[in-house]
Image (cartoon, rainbow, N blue to C red; front, top):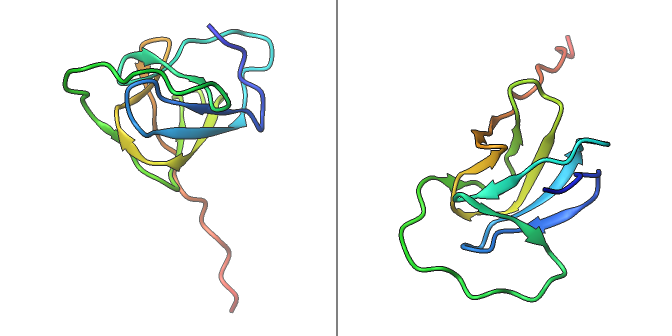
Length: 102
């Protein structure tokens, strides 16, 4: 369990996925996982990737959020493994509609 703070960088222990926290959980610790395995601090040494198939994928440049939109992550490096928080899969954040310039 980890408290997510804006600016924090994390990486997957089972794939190449890396994320940056845009909006965090402030005081509530959460279990952030990629492919069902907890993510680690990006500064930590790379652990050996575990064997086996990892379902889903994370796409570089996409923003992921929980249904309540209290947590938002920016994927800075894509790869295999679905992002989830406390066992709940994260979805894409919808792009905001810009006003027309007419």
